[in-house]
Image (tube, rainbow, N blue to C red; front, side, top):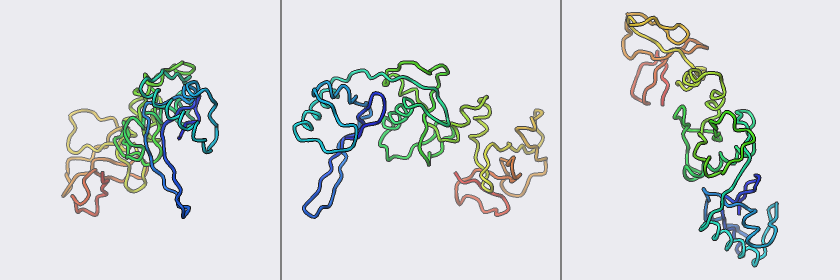
Length: 243
């Protein structure tokens, strides 16, 4: 059984570990609980305290625990946690619990997740952004609020705590393929129908290049690039950001 070290502790998965005569250990996952089970509720049903560290349970206690978990799955009880401030640098324990629950409810924890802001695959650990501004100290019923957690990559979560939404939109633009910097300026070809803001746009002129036109200019190294499918273009002089 795997439980989160939260307050209250929550059971999130059930596994079977077996050892044969050759001392080879096999591991099987039996269930992942996207609706968590409170360890405290299970203890009340079995009338015993469960250990707070990894160890084997004696068979009578294990059977009682499985029976109590089945009862709590059939008749779930509300689970309340005390929310903490949403912080991109250091999440409160309750927010970490919501993040785990949000991942489990999206599907298998081994499946690749996409950031809800930039739509790219989250390569590191997903982070949950909580939209409530004044959530610190609130008592939450976990199932009511897990759907409000927005799963993001760490970069977008950092930007979510910046002053403006425009910065978040800018940062979600494709990264420079040369230096990796995000937040490029958009390139405008031809005569624009409006007066572009030089902080967001680059006017490239009316002389169009031979071949594909760059879409973005990096603020850091001034490289120009476009977004295209791999193998679609063959212009080595133009840097291509492959999506």
